Length: 111
Image (cartoon, rainbow, N blue to C red):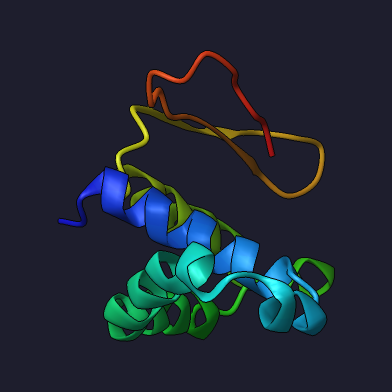
């Protein structure tokens, strides 16, 4: 099982790094980004495997192909990451997912 704190730290670090324009890498003090790059490098293989597993599951809404299986896999991965509440939300179309993760932060973000 993945340690949820490490999973979220890695995911956030990867997303933040990928979101940064290339020019910021050159202008930032090396010591500011070194811990982020070190964590990305350290977790690269496990992150890549998790992403490959998720992408490997076909789920094409327009073809009604693998949607329930994709939903179940995503829910499983959320649980493994430490989300306490994970629920499939039925809709008139394809199912959605509602999940919560309490990291003890004073603010909450929703996606």
